[in-house]
Image: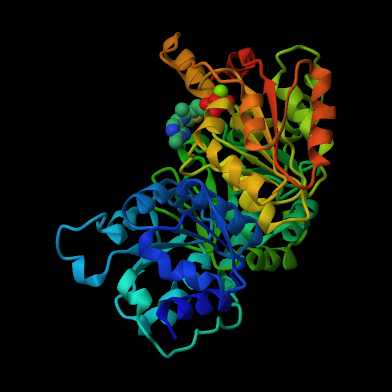
Length: 549
Ligand SMILES: Cc1ncc(C[n+]2csc(CCOP(=O)(O)OP(=O)(O)O)c2C)c(N)n1
Ligand SMILES: [Mg+2]
């Protein structure tokens, strides 16, 4: 068979259902072979959008998403989305075309070292120099992309190799690998640390979302009385309805939850990724013990010096700890934790939840959105001031239901990301919450959602500006520089794409607008809501310190 056909058989063996991309000349053989494959190709309008779609597809399914671009400019366009997936530990396989192997040693049309360019944003990448290597390279790319910590891998397929004749079979993925449990001595050491602690505190990170440790976390907090703070990537791991949730951590040094860190003498960091929230934010005096529970050993960092590192499967480790809890581990909390929970619950669910002001307060927008969505529906936040509000004021009740990019933090992820998420999880609503800046950054793939009838709901917070940057400048310098812009008529624009679109003109209109959009099943919608970002500085003044990111 032709190498491109073998390549597709290998993707099929990996369970690939969708490939997101933009075709180019140099991957024409793969594109033609796709015509005889059950894999659905989603023709995108920009490679960056394709990478974000594949990222979110991977995140909601747990299986690597796949994106495809051509060499040169196709590859450079993919780069931002790939960097984002890799830093957020989302499983992603990237496929790029390449010129023929006979012209790669010299100056040649569109040819450049794509694998070298991707090196800083992938776990592993390879060029297929010989068609007989396709089964190994594809298997390895998928295996490494999915292995903890997940990330991006790259396969580059030169056009002459794709055309070659080859006689081979895919390597079928083996049984799921069971990760080891930390040994008994380590579990004993962890239990001793918890027993000796006066006020241990759980800090849950993105690994907990990927592994679904909710049951074991619930067991631990219910048995011991401990509280849990969650990074943005871990929102919902312990339901925010649970009396022991301290909601999201990572906004800034002075959010209320930091008081719990200050009073805690042991932080139990589970699946924690310091890219999200650096330990120097919550371990200021280096006065805490740290129990590190993760798939991999801890990063070396002056502010993160674990007393015990329990390395292995995090759910299994928590289970092993839960099985051996005794009287010395009970009632591990101090009153501050309950006070902070109460205060946050009030601010999130009550304070401005019914505010009638217009433009709308971020708190009211999020309360309305929460009220219209089911526990398992998915919100994807873009990057900006709205992200900070979403992290803080959108309670999550199940892991993976409030997805916030918090590593690379590229604007423009939410609109295309929602398409990938909805295709990966067609049974749940997917709402892409974006600023007007981020919306305009990857608007083109609204056409993709229309074409493939993907009913994503895009909620655009309109402030005619790069709100977060203005906020940070205001805090840091007392004035702003070049952060505002003039929007086109966003409703007319979205309508031109064929999307359902509406602008909210009073606070009471948002919920009906959301309900109407969520009932549409065959096309995307856009809801433009003017937002009152005067709330940003009010929050800063209340919390007393600059928000990070
Ligand atoms: C691709 C990219 N460019 C620039 C930034 C820096 N940045 C972070 S937030 C932000 C402003 C976002 O504006 P908008 O999307 O309108 O959201 P808002 O802050 O107004 O809610 C910018 C420019 C970024 N994170 N990603
Ligand atoms: Mg904005």
